Length: 419
Image 1 (cartoon, rainbow, N blue to C red):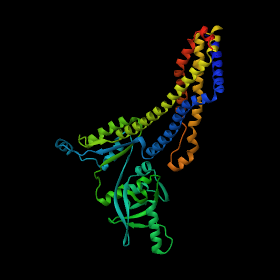
Image 2: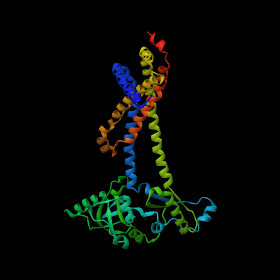
Image 3: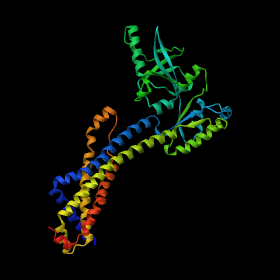
Image 4: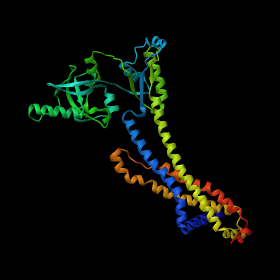
């Protein structure tokens, strides 16, 4: 067949398909439901999954994301390890600064040391957390906002000034306490607080962030140098070193470089391990499993829809045996008959797939309530929509092969005598 005949036969086959759907509305509707639900499941779940992935990625991005590398200290368990690790000073706070300074792949180091303490208010106390941080931790990892007052400046960090930023709950409590004590409205900015451990700090601002899980509402942030000066330790040990690298795609290169630098610092003792690789691997594996699960569920729907298409095509052939016989008597070849019924099957499936796309977008109607309640933004996954639609047509092709083959092999003499 030349291209003109193929186009004309395709047009006639598609037209015949729609006539069959219109002539047998109820039967066609039942047939299309399987394909429609299968495609709708893929589209709906891809929209929800995309929103969930976006939400989790947002959290990761706000806390360093896939750019974060975490290094943990290994505790020796065997005598050989104890002897080997004894020459190493272990993970130290200055390791972070060294890796940041000498690492070509490292963007910045994150420093945060904390302890529990209490604010002394006359005869009462307020429980809180004291966190010594560097500038990168507040600005690049925690991504804080200063609602009232000012943020730490470079002199605060370099000189270790006794200044602090307090969480919202601490700010509110202190404001109410001093207002009650002084019987007048009094802000707490530039006021001094005295901690149970003897440290006195000047409040210069109130810190706020979206990370409620960090409990920063009850946290006092001070420059790390201020905390170390108070503790009398210039280079204390730490259980973990946290870094942000420049390019997440070069994480293996970054780990190799960091390993070399740490081995030099620790005198050849590999008393550390990276937690990042397993963390990223587990995260990726989890979403791959979700994709496979959703794909399997949707494939079942498409498989059922394919069986329905095969059933309606076989019924259609049984009803149109004389029509097939007449076409063959007038010169229609087996290939033309086969092609006609394959196109009809694919058209049925295409209609079901198109309706499935529309049905699968229904979660978008609830996008705003979901965003408000769960902070998940449901988005349209155009790639998944295209794949689902094309796969539905492919299902129509696969399950239309047998009916088309059966129609093409009908004997024109028997078909003309069929009653």
